Image 1 (cartoon, rainbow, N blue to C red):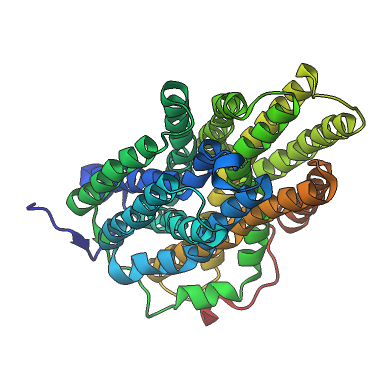
Image 2: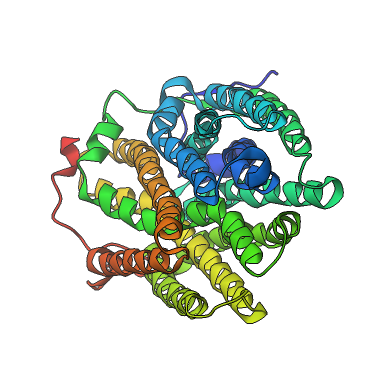
Length: 468
């Protein structure tokens, strides 16, 4: 490899340099960062597929136990996102993506061993699910790496592709699980894990060969510490709880929810698992594609407007699910085809809308700090460095906090099943979250006339920017 793998002088806003070769470097780093994140996402969500291969009569796990596995993986993935984003700045994007791909071989092998030996205690499954959470940390690492390579005018599209391409890892492993279920039944889950042992190796090798390490301005601005005391950081994190938290929470829980409802409709365990797998992958797939569109739409209309519109539509979709679920609660006997159709359509709408919201919120992050940098009493190059470093730090914080929304969704569904036997109470909780998110978006970013045609921001009374 004759090319340099450490870049010390990078200005994505330099149009001449961009067209003369920087664009190709950025694209190469985007492609391989997305691939590594894609595979990491699949491993992170591997237990959303494995639970369909685990009949309660064989493994001794209840539906509530299986939802707890999803919550555990989601929680660990969220907690690792801040250190993973910081690790890119410390160790370099190339170095960290190689490590983060290789370390996921451990829980993948562990999953094979656990499923080959049924009857193990719940804590063993929880430990393995927690280790798969390292795949969730890959998101912040890859997106922080992509963020520094692209100019402001293209960040919405680049981050949308990065987030969407990574998110597609969830439906991809679910499709693979569907193929294995359809061809080998629900007692051969090892093929799913074996495929990902190969893909993780490819991701590590590709990262080593094609990614670059970028020198970032860490010491001058201490961006993570500065980001933690900014109001924008926590507003954006709250919005991401509602949008991305919904995506990852529903992605982990949707297959189990469908399986529970298909069994309530009178199907056996194998038939219910197969039917759930046939539908479950569609939601995360639609959300991942919608996320890329949400980023592009936000480039044109502004992230605040798109986020607000997505949250309003999510309120309508979850309200429809409440009606369907409450209707099912009041009826005796197996669930009807109409009720199952209502569940599926309502969830698909939520997946699409939270995908659009994901892309919109991520577009807002670099735009917010690009705007804030204009108030700094510093040279233009220093302001750009500050905005890039802060954006990378905030991406890690927002991604970590947003992932906790997925934990809440799995725990809310688990508690709702334990106490009432249905999802209705959990849906009401989701409605409250979306109402709070839409109100916050309007208050923070949309209630004041914008100074620029594509600005998402009303100027908030923040601490002096240069103090960070």
